[in-house]
Image (tube, rainbow, N blue to C red; front, side, top):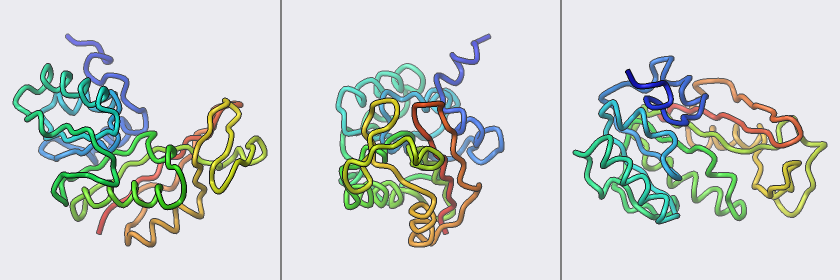
Amino acid sequence: MPTLEEQFGKIDVYLFDQLLRGRIVPGMSVFDAGCGAGRNLVYLLRQGYEVFAADANPQAVDHVRALAAQLAPTLPAANFRAESLERLSFPAPLADVVLSSAVLHFARDDEHFRAMLLGAWRALKPDGLFFCRLASSIGIEAQLVHIAGRHYLLPDGSERYLVDEALLLSFTRELGAHLLDPIKTTLVQNQRAMTTWVLRKP
């Protein structure tokens, strides 16, 4: 019997929570918008989901293609593309579920953040689930060093584009979406704050 790590990989625990609650089920198509090396795709590939993924890093996409070839060899290599979220070549809408895990906080500025978010959102089918995890300022405001705009130096030494509750709620309204869960933030002691933003597309 495979171990839990073999079944699920290094899946984000908050994405795992969505699976446990039955919001992502077999038969759905899933697009990982900014997939990295595919840490959130192991279980989905193993279970036969129709998986698509994109990342601006070609080496990361090569890794995901190799992972898919091992776990879901019937999926076409074209499902995994090296491209930025604001310039996706996939037809829209694409998937029942869009994942954006630790991606949007790499935005260069407000315009870039909006472009990445809207690129991922366009890939989502009506009534689809949008799952997003990103760094925020929520709960660690006093520990941040402002650089410019929404860019801050975090206590862990990294620089990130940081959202807050007001911005996420503003985009929720602009997208015409509704929150499936309250906005939740995990504080990592003296390092960062990571916020989970889960939406349903109308």
